[in-house]
Amino acid sequence: MASTSASAIEGTVTERRGIPAAAFVEDVQTYLSQSGLDANSALAFFQERLQQYRVVEMKLLAQQRDLQAKIPDIEKCLDVVAALQAKKGTGEALLADFEVSEGIYSRARIEDADSVCLWLGANVMLDYSCEEATALLQKNLENAKASLEVLVADLQFLRDQVTITQVTIARVYNWDVHQRRTRQAIVTTES
Amino acid sequence: MQQAGSSGSEMEVTWEDQQKINQFSRLNNRFHELEDEIKLAKETNDNLEDASNELILTDDDIVRFQIGEVFAHIPKDEVETRIEQMKEVTSKNLEKLEEEKESIVAQMDELKKILYGKFKDSINLEED
Image 1 (cartoon, rainbow over the protein chains, first blue to last red):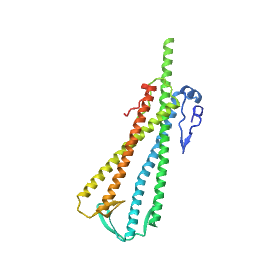
Image 2: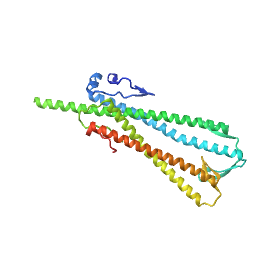
Image 3: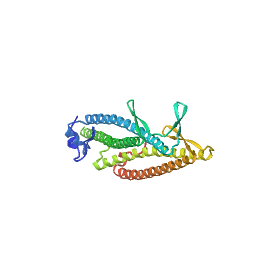
Image 4: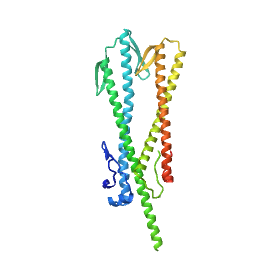
């Protein structure tokens, strides 16, 4: 890939978690002469970069959707454990209707709940006391929220790079059009 | 999606301009996210409203209230309290979202003025 370091601004991030930053072009003329590219090659390079950014964006958006689905799930589990704990003290049983199959519900009578089983994934389910379950679920919730924050920051960074690349493409293209027009004007005045 | 496009003229773009364009893009993305979130929050609010109205009409002492994936049998009064709490949380959330949306619209208008001022026709910041 052509070197863009000559036109890069000092002190900015050059990449973030594997995503290369788009170097800002101060002056199109200088950039093209320093990199030794003509306008078309430069445009092709930027278009390719844009495609790569799009691929990464798709991946990050998919991860974001997964996390955004996971968080309400964990919160629901916390609600259930809290409800069980609340009933524990009273000595009453908790009656709950649950779905056995689509459209078919059954009634469950839950007496004093000392422990709950948590599905950990990979066909593993473990027994926990209510307090331990709440602690584990709470920790998972916090991790999920922290991951989501990092992901959102990554997406913002990525979108900035996409915008910079789009603007650079437009400027190189316009510069090229401008050059052709000036050359045309010179040719016509000479002939 | 809004784009920054130029139409054939030789325009100087500084790093500050680029950062303003980036900022505008971020705000615009957040604006659309907020619109979706506000729509969801309004729906939740309406659902809670309907639920509490139904509750007033029902004669049962025990109501099946959804916790997680199951419907727990809970006394009507407790359900009323829970729904009131949920309604409060949702309306506070909705208020916060609306405020954020207003602030973003104001910031975007500011940036539009500045960017159109410098670039005039060379830039397009409208929704297509």
